[in-house]
Amino acid sequence: MAASTYFKPTNFPHGVTSQGTPVLTETAANEPFEVAGAVDAGGTVTAKTDTAPVAGGAAGVLMSSVANFGIFYGTGAPTISAAQGSLYLRRDGTGVGDRAYINTNGTTGWTAITTVA
Image (tube, rainbow, N blue to C red):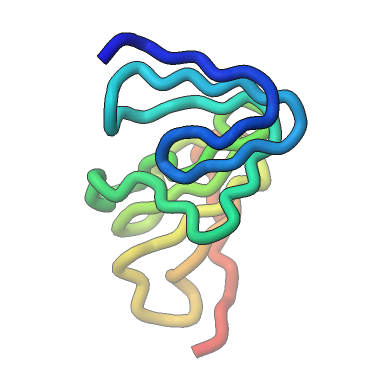
């Protein structure tokens, strides 16, 4: 399938509806696409379903113009570099002190967020 680009508010493939003036580019059927602008999915948004959690972390959802800022996920304590304030969700966390982390220094510094049992 050839690349498709969509402009203005519209209903895109995959059930995504846009708000504002986004641009969506899809490279091929069932391939990832990017949207510039706000998106209202009107339901569940599924991301990275073809990627198993990796040791130390992987990017799940990146947001804003700040490089590498977003929500990361993985197994084991985070070792991935991310922007300060990013979140890491640990798939194999077993206690109140190892399920979620926040990046504290803009590189590989992560502090555990204490969660409720």
